[in-house]
Amino acid sequence: MIDVISIPEERARLLRKNEKLLKVIEKACSVKVSIKENEIWMEGNPIEILRVKEVFRAFGRGFSWNDSLNLLDENYFLEIINVKDYAKSRNRIIELKGRVIGTRGKIKRIIERETNTKISIYGKTISIIGKVKNIKTAEKVIRSILEGKKHGTALKILEEKRE
Image (cartoon, rainbow, N blue to C red; front, side, top):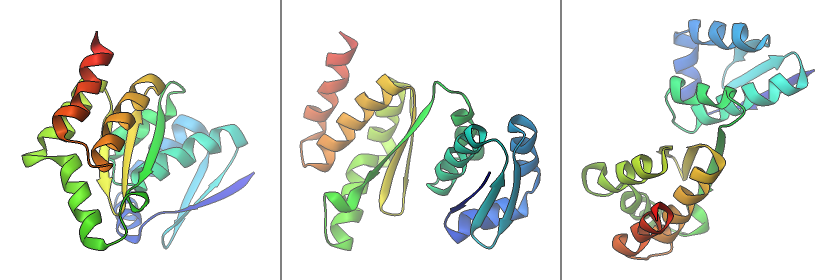
């Protein structure tokens, strides 16, 4: 089977600069991978291709290569929240992403630490990598912030999950 995924040009450029990254995934999954412009072509077993495709989707959404590789583990998943669902104007999208990040990244770090997830804020999306239960908790906190709730109120979700 052959499949293709498009990722942002700047992210594809990083992969083209370091082709060793592609060799790592080819060895791990027995999937042949090639890059043409901002498209990643994958050839191999359909189930393995689905896993590899998620790795490239995560990398395209701004995660580091190592964080993206976590998706090769069947216990890890990727969730993508579109900030455009919460704001129409460019300025409001920027403002909402800033609220999720918090001052000097504090809110994002708290969510990552308390839910054992990785979060990437890139373009018009906020993406989460982690185990299902943890992703759902992080997503709930992030969505409540995007809906305009105060940080303290949103972070109480983490306290409730801990108890």
